[in-house]
Amino acid sequence: MLHYTNPMNLIAPPPPPIAWSAQLNVLSQRFAHQIAAIDSHGNSLSYAELNQRAHALAAHLHELGIQEGEPVGTLVPNSIDAVWVSYGVRLSGACETPLSWGYTTDELQWCTHLASVKTVVSLEQRSNELQKLGLTCVPTQRIALSKPLTPEPFPPCSANASARILFTSGTTGKPKGVLYTQQARWAGEQLLKGSLPFIPSPGQKILLMTPFIHGASLLTFAWLDHGATIVLHDGVDIEKIKPLLDADALDAVFAPPTVLAKITSALAGSTYKNVRCIFTGTQPLTPALYKRACAMFGPKVRITYGKSECINPITVLDPEATHAYLTADDIPAGACVGWPASGVEIKVQEALSEEEPHGEILLRAPHMSAGLIDATGFKPHQPEGWHSTGDLGYVDSAGRLILTGRVADVIKTGGYRVNPDEIEVALAANTLCSQICVTSLVSDYWGEIITAVAEGAQDGWQEQCLQLLELMSKHKRPRLFAALEALPRNPQGKISRKQVSRVVLETHALQDGPYPTLTSR
Image (cartoon, rainbow, N blue to C red; front, side, top):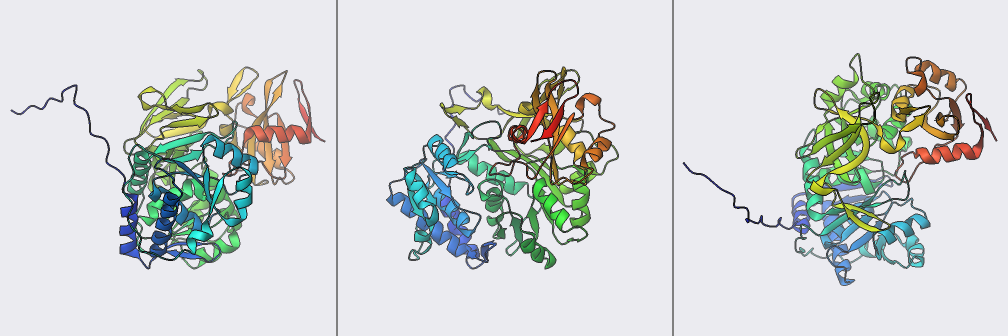
């Protein structure tokens, strides 16, 4: 009988290098004249052009002396440029540091300083702004117009080298940097491809409307690895989206709940059954919104859970499971995001209280970031690889992860701890406003006062809120209501509850006490 013993002093070999350049060369050879990307301005990019421009950018970065793992910023709007620029930086072995096109000068200064970025690939129109910040600008136009050359393959990138720095949304303070290694980036892309509900074919199109720097880029890499086509738009422009849907030109759509809400509202009554999948995530999907999406597209919504600190997919709920869960007779409070993806571990820390038996979610995974960068420097994740997500939730009897809120957002009012997400889910069915944010205002009497703030409110919206909350415990119901023309959002489109509270206090006068009131200034 053979018996294998692993000696304690046996050292595992280092992970193999990542051959990004060779991989893109192969894609170009296979799909040279196929269209890789189309943007909302009608520009298109073939696989051969993607390969040529990406290698040209990588060569130029090497000429500038950029070393492996050195942070290089990218500041490009949603366009075909965003695609080849992203590929080019990673082919060079540099640490790609995507910057939102919507960043203010102060935000650019903060993020580039935090990540130690000295060089930024951007459009000519931002070069003066970048130079004033002491940054070297590499204009995209110079690379795009360079003489086409046969792309020479670059050597593979070291697996443990820095590969990408993303930034947190900054909803609880200034953004932090999230550092990924080349190995983690590669593993995340393979896991995302492996969890797609179907394998895209050449010519099949996915519509991406959110900023390229986060979820849209992840789906781009997964989609293009199969020779298919991405359609990249800058936001939700119904006049441009409707013709694509009407012509059955789309096979899939990436639509987080805020995007899905806009599409289903603007095109209510239309049906597009040829779309094979609606990819969603980033925010909770309510049963009411799912019902509208299902009526328009059929039961084809796929939910995933991802974070800046651990990109999609952490968990996956496929379309069939999504439909079964969100059409059940009794749906628990919270957002079901499915089962852990392959290799992902999840555990829940101690509960908040006896009344709220949910705890903070911790995770570790092969595609998780190495750690966070803040004003004091780089901080690796906790020992043994666990990361505290800041999300609250629990694992149900079927093994699915249910999100119930954020630790930082828990409201302490009148001796109770209340999750605002639970209230927002109940209020999502309000038909007299476009969106409701539940936040809190500081109170000497209550500690914090639960406040519902509506965007695009019509007469009677408050009364409808009260009707929707009749079955909810009294201590969880908002005591104050306010309406704003627009809820404040960060460059990623996420609503900041702290900023909402600040704007409410700037535009209203609070009368504190047992029966608080808000009066418009």
